[in-house]
Image 1 (cartoon, rainbow, N blue to C red):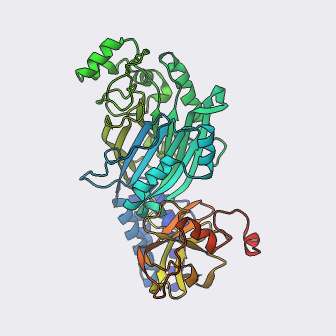
Image 2: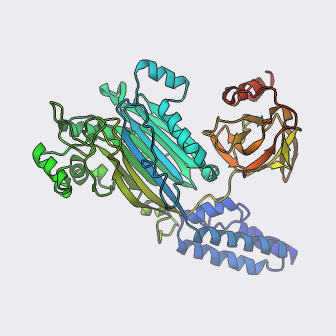
Length: 540
């Protein structure tokens, strides 16, 4: 009976919840769940029927039976569960100005509804004079510092950013989502001066969020009424060149693509008096059919699948500074909706076209626009900022973090401490991986208090996990509330985060508190921001 059970289980091991030819075993939870998420319910039922037949064959082997049942339970749990994340996108041509004193309304920080899970902030015309730009290369630019100062006390971390002269794209997320955001990449494309100058173009951040591919693209396209074709040509070029030659999907091949920025499309044909009169009477719909972007969406094949909310707000360009009055200069620019937010969902049928797969009964990822508005109270530039708030609903294809970690016992600045962690087999580990100790209000991945190399500072290893050592001399003497984060060098992101925990303060008098920005460099010379290999690091 034992041998027949083993034979039956070997047969079952050849069955995955998604692919009858798959060699992945039932114990490979993440692979089977990911496949289940990308197939269909009909397919899942088909695979379950096969698996249940195997369960009957091996029912005499309690251990195997429990393993199969547990895997099925987990698959059904994940399949039936949906995540609802709130996204808030901002696009703003800031006209080289400094940040305003307050962005509470811009970021909806006083909203009574659910808090945002992610902030995506796209700026254009950030001050890029040579002295400012060189300074920003060495240090964070004033806008990044400003938004980090606002959002980090609320539990958001700067996940990624990309800058090309005046174009800046920032992404902030809640701590809890960090282990499920992977494969983060950035890119930029110049289109100014025939592709040699970055005053115009696009910057992008792409990622995998709970297993779903998402791309955010912030663009600044050519100005002036007559340059519609140039705007379209430039956007096509940006779409083609972003992530070109890299082993990741093109922008259009992501499941969800956001396109936003100062797109510079104007209102054609109508005179300035008719346009202003329509705006004064809030009859915005009279202007929609002559909006150049709306017209292009009806004519250009590559734009047809992009969607946008209704333009139920005043055109956002061009205003006198610090006012809600349209341009009173000699040029008297005609108002226009230059600042836009659009999105494109990849056709769900494309994902189910492979041989042996069943069509999707419902899309595993969907997007709902909750609000699309401008913010007239901000007057630092001649553009008004525009925001879009979305609900992103997903079936998670990734349910477990790559690393689980926690502090061992009670931590105090009086003694050495230990960190215990366990890593998933699929983690692409490196000698340059490290575990950082962070304040709970940390701003970004390099904003650590101290850190430990996972290999060099390892003190024990077993099948249940590994232990890493931190010296008491590196623990903050004042104590407080902290987090531990595992940073993957190969993935260039945080792949595991602990629950917040307390460090007890030192009982001995603190002679002098080291400034926060200097603490990391003083504690270790071989800090994680340096480059090299493990042997070079050990020889320091």
